[in-house]
Each structure stands twice: as structure tokens, then as C-alpha cells.
Image (cartoon, rainbow, N blue to C red; front, side, top):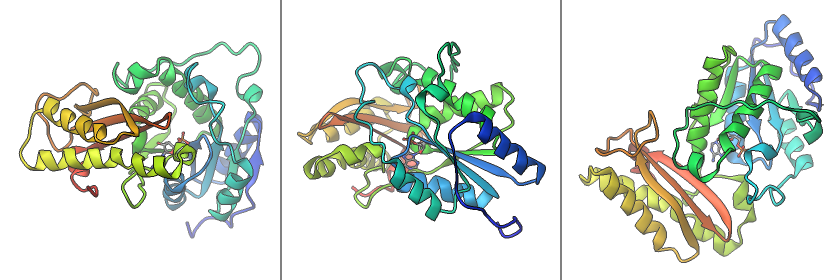
Length: 296
Ligand code: AMP
């Protein structure tokens, strides 16, 4: 923003008290700050959040922390990509003001005993498939919001149940942070950008585009007149089934307010999709109106 004092170098901070101090300094200078929480391995989706933050805020913090509490025992925590040096270079070139990169034992020191449970993601889809996931998300997000004290936090629509959880917790705990939701950024073939895409072989990468095709075909069926939520969910599932490298986890068409299956589909109903490709679990979602616009 042009009226802000000149930006400084990227500050890389590793301790909560350092981040709190930065936030205090900015608040005293009446600078509006934004937070973009990430697990690193930054891609175009993250960069879109960062650019949205820069357009609305005078100071931007990006957190880079792979949060073990949001991974299940059988999930891909060890294999999660962590190219920290490259991420910091990206943050520098994006003009980010601070990177918050706490070590695991800084985030969760011995004796850590708090969990934050937010009942806002419903009981299905990611909530059902990843028990404990949203408690892990809510706990780390509470810590990040309480430490960075941003005026706005920027989250991606790609993780729509996470958006519901964080929006609810910011309100319920009176944290004073607005949650701004940014649209899903996609590759040319429609595949939603994700740090996990990096783990796919070239063949797997091509196969992964089936998720976006499934969304697109479901959107097209809706536009064609299909209004049964169940029938539309079946369309999504059948498209994924056509790709031998993909294994469907779930497909649903839901009411956006509670993530319960929608009997009567509307443009705002959301298609929820998860599948594994080469053992990598990928998720995607779109409203039926958005899905109808995706490349088939
Ligand atoms: P992650 O690093 O996967 O935890 O994601 C950090 C933030 O980036 C979350 O708010 C995600 O929803 C968001 N995000 C991830 N992928 C995308 C994408 N393709 N488009 C927009 N936002 C995304």
C-alpha cells in the first residue's frame, strides 16, 4: 500500500515473543497487518494468498510450520515436503515482511496440554476421514492468531472445512481477526495447486487432473438440469472411477452451511471430493456454479 512506510527486509522469526513484538510495533505504528498461515512448500495458491494480503495490509506475516497435530498416525507427515530455504526466497521476492518458522518444540514445548475443539466442520468428509485433524488445525491457528494478532488472516477455499473451523474460532474466541477466503488456484488442466502435488510422478500428476474433471462434469450435469444431490455425487464418483491411477475416498454434494449432503442441489451447493493418486491424498471442492466453469 502506497501510504505505508517503506518495507524492510524479510524478518525470519522463530519464537512467539519475537512475532508478538513485531505485531506490537506495527500496531503502535498504526500499520494494518495480515497473516497467511502455511505449511510451506509454497506454490501459486499460497502466493495468491500472499498477494491478497499485500493488497489489503501494510505488513504481511507468513507462517511456515508443518503441524504434526493435524496429521493422523497413518498420514504423510514424514514425507511432507519442507524446502524452507526456497520458501524464504519466495517470501523475499514477494515482499513479505516476516516469516514465522517456529521449531516443533517451540510451538509445542514439553508439558503442552491445550486443545481447541471447534464444532464447525460437521462430522463428514475431512472431519470423518481424519479424526483429530480439525482439533490440530484449530489449536495451531489459535496460537498463530493469538501471537501474530493480525487484522486479517488469509485462507484458501480449497480447504473449505478448515475455513469454517477457523472463521468460527476467530469469532467465538473474540480474536478480532477477519478471515478472508481466497479462491482456489488451479493449474492449467484444472488440478488445484497443492504442496502434495510435488510428490506425484509425471503420470500421477496427469492422473490427478481427474479431480477437477469430476468437479467439471458434476457442474455440467447440474447445468443440464440434474438437481438430485445424490445423483450429482454419483457423477463425481464415476468420473474418478474412470481413472485407474486414482482411488476415490469420498464424493459428496453438500449444503454449504453445515456440510451435510444436499437433497436438492443449488448453485451454492458444494461438491466435496477426495482421492488418492500414487498413495498421495488429494482433496478438492467447488460450488456447483464454480464447478460448471472448470475445464472438462
Ligand atoms: P497449506 O500449506 O496446505 O496448509 O495451505 C496453507 C493455506 O493455503 C491454506 O489456507 C490453504 O487453504 C491455502 N491453499 C492451499 N492450496 C491452495 C490453492 N490451490 N489455492 C488457494 N489457496 C490454497
